[in-house]
Image 1 (cartoon, helix red, strand yellow):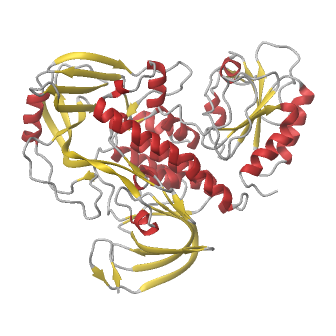
Image 2: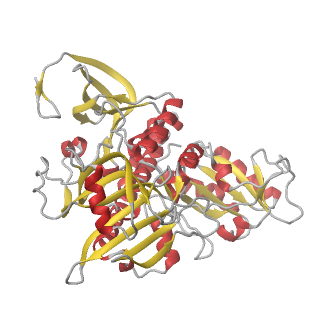
Image 3: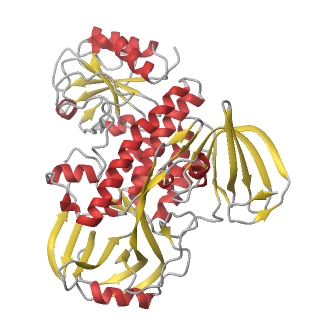
Length: 558
């Protein structure tokens, strides 16, 4: 007899299977789906299970950050997302009906993507379709009941919608099962933090008003003492006039039911407000007259802020809300979780394929938990004191909100800095750039175009000395780990090696953008990780030594 996840006892015959897959992913939200997609594009077999019988119809996480779009570009998913999403142009803030600020979401011109909005159910649909194209289908109605691990693998017990039980042996397990994660609880990870006392209402509706399209609307009404009395936040969604609106539950609500596990976070599970209930709040808080219609769904939810003490134990890891939760300020949650998934995914792939030792997996916690801690602290600060609580200049603020400043300098995989101090260094995001040309294409390419579809590490070799480039190419070819070399030649100079002479892809920096953004010191090499961060930066003459140092840090087998 087993104790089920929903609190009922159940009995079922257990089907015992051998190691039929490398990785089991629990939870098919955007984080779990991104983890599965990253593993599959690296050729690793995985299963992904979710207790929900169908994709949930909720527009919970709707903001998509530029950094997430870059990661999905590398995976080959971004075009479908761009065709479905709408742009977020900025935020309008009103206090007592008067516009007090207008924040424009502007990024430097070399950043390839802007801010976007897409309902979570659409994000999950696109990720599911991408994953299905790689041969993996979400196993709906199948939940994790329990698991144990030993030095050689993980034994997991699953229950299907039919009640049939299955015991499966896998090499690794990844818990992307949300704020109430069974994986996290089974591992015994702490989840320290607190909860906000207020309850909120969400509604996916159409608003007929005269406010400009593409802007988040934040409308505040002051209390008698001058403090913030109530807040309405409206985020644009695809569809004419459609928004996801959030607002506090009107005063004197019934006390919310305590969360069974003490984590008061997420949708309530009960009935949400009807259209008239949402309209009454909008009538009170909207800066302009608005008539609501087309209610797709609504719910009541609560917000907590918590983070685990470790992102994994042994062969089992957590990502996304299973590892960190916080206020939805700035749409940081889902995007941070997707970065968790990609960071862990490429590392698991190297280990599963036998190309790197398990020591590499320790870098997942070392790199991602500090990011989670920063995001939790920042979103709590912004939720309680506003975005102006951070003193940074507007450019830095915008880059941070876009998650373009996430980096791992000083981490276990970041090598010795090389070149100008203000140049991108190991651990930093590898900047995108435009203006790369080939003799055949009649149009310039972006660096993302060059990286797209290459699942492993890419070594960018910048220079024009044919002998130096050829020597660096030879060093890359001798190195293990499936490295791919790409040559970038300076623009507008004579004497560079002719096209095709190096035996690797060659591009010319015709617009000089690569040189402007990467600050190459004469002939310079760069290792770009599968997650788009720089792994190493080195002089071409030291290619062999630099690759040896970086791959040793990765625990790559020689």
